[in-house]
Length: 263
Image 1 (cartoon, rainbow, N blue to C red):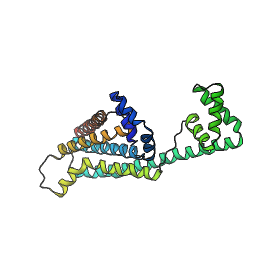
Image 2: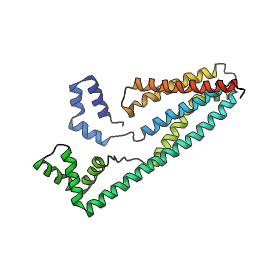
Image 3: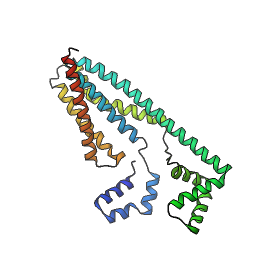
Image 4: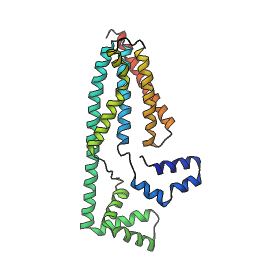
């Protein structure tokens, strides 16, 4: 995520631009890219923001469908904003911590096996490269190169045998990124109702304004999601706009139906 060189390479591929592909694969570009990778918490922020917008606007739509007062929208909206925000943040913290703990445990296991039964681990390395097409002296050579450095050996076992990628992330910052994004983005559907509360002279239609602001936010954050998924930012933005809109329509319908029952 956030690797400009990879983004340039992807753009070059989409355009089938050989010259741009070459520029993205120069020695200097590759080394510079490795030193400046950013965006470790971008995924946490984007998905927290999307969830915050969608769930809060669902509350707004449901209450509006039931034709309840703006005070109810604010009460339920902020209750959802704080409650779900904390839940999302804590959930992401625990999930990230569990994943990192598991990775650390598996790394220690691999290190222990290399120290106590290197012959077995060497056979696993040979098997990995045999599946990749190495044979004979080439297989012997690449195996010896890998096992000559313990860290490289363990790294190979982690990625090739276990499919585990170690990330430099901290559970606390992952949780904070999710919570902050949920809170900031989730406030957008409530913004006009808060302004109306403090500035009663506002005459614009609050629900229609909330729809506009939420739709805009959904598209923008959805477009940011393309930095994580690597798909077209327009497609990503429109997908989230559709999903958020569908959720709002369903919530509005539920509110309207309950209003008909006298709730």
